Image (cartoon, rainbow, N blue to C red; front, side, top):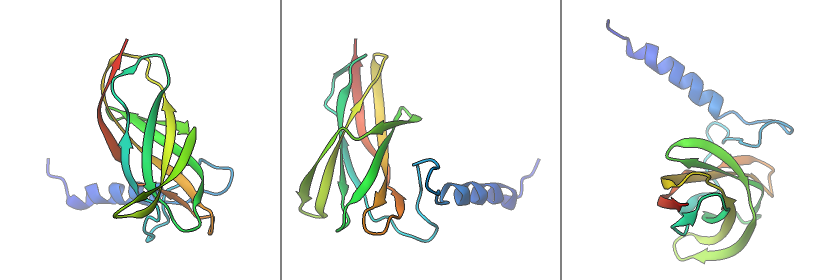
Length: 150
């Protein structure tokens, strides 16, 4: 059976278009960028001290660039070996300066894993720009291999 490339591209374009649509207030907070816009906030790194203990919350630190007016409504989404996303709220943050990117924020999340194993943990945040109210989503960053022990 021979497939036409158009038959593969049309569903992909529809899915991509739907995933980039903005959401109205009251809908899901996982808003993506409006079509044609560029990210204002970039995730630079995700750090998780390893090993961690199964069944107990453990810290994850995500460093992100920051627009001049700042952001609000930050929610983190994390994946364990590609499974997810699982939603986590910020448990703390502090300002930092990166020599290449300037003003940044270090967001702290308390993650939880119930099963001992080694996981590749990745994540991103969604946010609202404090000046414009526009919603956005960062790129995905990885903490690499994280060992979860009993």
